[in-house]
Length: 284
Image (cartoon, rainbow, N blue to C red; front, side, top):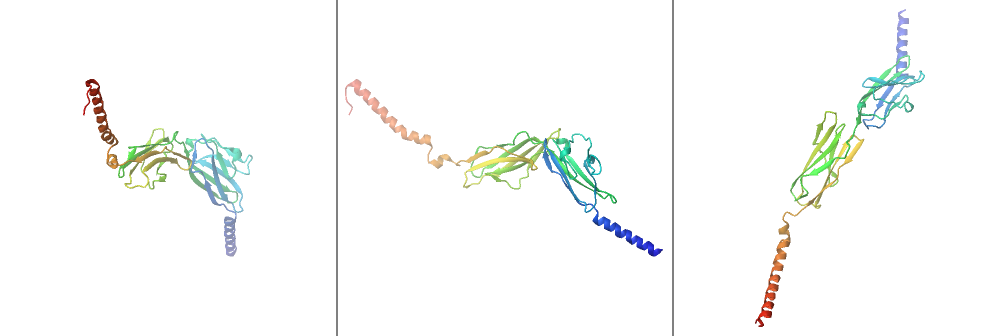
C-alpha cells in the first residue's frame, strides 16, 4: 500500500511538472506608448506565449478598473466596459491589442494587461505600464537676450520660456547650431489647472578671439518624443572694443579737419572780390 501511494505521488508530481512546463503561460510583455498627444489614438499591446495551453481571457485595466475583455469561447468574444473618457475601437482590437481613440488628459495613468490560460491550470499573469497624455503648448517657445551685440569677454544672458502645457516642456539650448551640453537649469511654474510653464536661463561668456564674430542663440522645447518646437533665433554680432582708436580718428573729426581750411580760403577770396568791386582798386 505504501508503495502504491508513493508511486501515485510520483506520478502526480511528474504530471503536474509536465503540464506546468509544457502547457503554460510565459513571456508576458506589455507595450504601452510612454506618451501620446491629446486627440490622437493609442494602441496598447500585450504579447505572450501559451506553449500548448489555450487562451482563456485577456483583460485590460486602467488604474485597476477593467475596461476591455477578450474571451475567445464567448460570443461575442469582445466586451467593453463603460469607463469615463475611454473609447475603444472594437473593430481594431483583439486578443493582442486594444485601441483607444481620441485620448485626452484624463486618460493619463497606469494600464494593466492580464492574461489567463485555460483549464486545467488557469495560469494568470499581469503586467503594467504608464501612459501620459500630452497637451502641448499653443505656441512655440520664446527667447530673449540682455544685449544685441557683444565684445569678446562679455557675459551674455539669454532667457527661454515655453507656454503652459501638460506636462511641462523640457528646454534645450543651441548656440551657433551646437547643442549646449549638460544644461539642466529648467524652472517649472505650476498652475492650479495642472498645466505648467518652463523657464530657462543660459549664461555664457563670449570668446575674446573667436573666428566667428556672431552668436546665434535659440532654444527648443520638447515633451517626450511626441512634441517639439523651436524658438526664433536671436543674432548677436561682435563689435570692436574701441571703434575710434581702431580707425585712428573719428569720421566726423576727419571731415572737419579736411573741410575747415578749404572753407576759410573760399571766404577770404569772396571778401577780396567784394573789396575790388566796390573800391575799384586792386589789392596786391
